[in-house]
Image 1 (tube, rainbow, N blue to C red):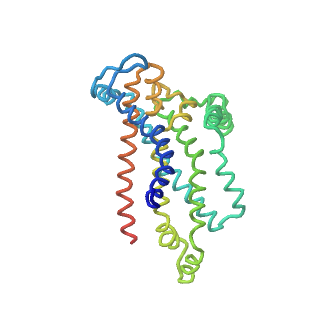
Image 2 (spheres, helix red, strand yellow; image 1 turned 90 degrees about the vertical axis):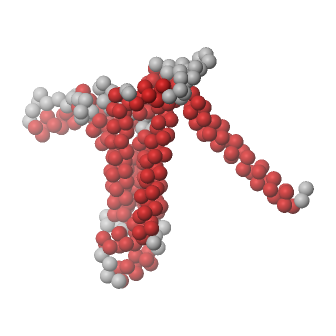
Length: 295
């Protein structure tokens, strides 16, 4: 065997285990899910091909649209809440506008280190009719009969969940942004200050252009994470009342494992994949235009 062939086969040997693992854990399940989504399989027996029937049922189911609406609300809170707040806090800490950087970083990041189930139970108790929020409002309103029943309200039940999601995951983006801000050369900022740039001009003209790739990555994380939200919401409300806090992942879980409609559940999961790809593709187009503007 020649040296060139040996080198070629060494690459194959090094790459093959990773490709095999990726194919067995990622590619194969996706292809299997895609195939099953066109059947009426119930988990046992031989699946029967039903074409696009599962997809049509999903698109005609109002419960699916409740889930889609809630997922889009979670996406909005993540993209327009967690990321801007995380970046703002990271910038404040990076520019040393407050003392105790390590303390504030740890406190803001702390919620993400706690299990989502524990967080859900904690906040569920706080917002319960006999919880801390009710007790505080009785003191503030001077009304001993005040009772918070927000989880019984179809319109407002989703808002405590959105608040908890904002509170819990903002620290993740703080750490990501802070780590990348620390890579920005201090000499560039010093040069901008010498040239008379204000804090706002430094942020807009120096910091943000160097952070476009990081911003794109964090938004992709936010979108994919939001569209697959499950554990926190399931533990807080189970999707109730009357499906009004249900997200698509809970809708998929209920139909797949409770009603044993594996074909239907697989179709729901493929819709999640399609939504993720669509939103991320749109996002990449927008960021290409932004990057072209700064070039």
